[in-house]
Length: 120
Image 1: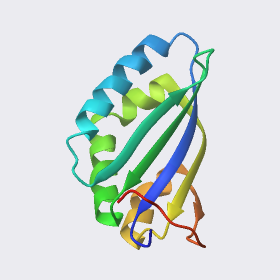
Image 2: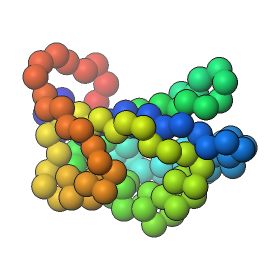
Image 3: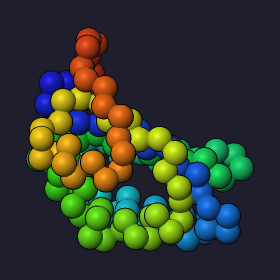
Image 4: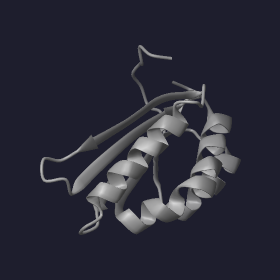
């Protein structure tokens, strides 16, 4: 738990963009599955197809920075054309470099306080 960085990002799919967003999601899931230090990458959608929550968990800050830089280079422009970010909550104690790459997303940070995780 000490080194992991995770988050939940909540977005609203823009009107008429669900099909494009679904295609982008499939591309992002496929690409991210190639990142060995990405521990979880799960997308959830409401029944009406408007609200999407994305849960991501990384082994450490370096893995997070690697992913975010890839996202910015490959997918960010299309992502923002399809959805509005409503909330972005980061969990853990990310490094200064990691906080720097996340700063543009307007995150709220919650640091470790207690508990455990059964997956690495």
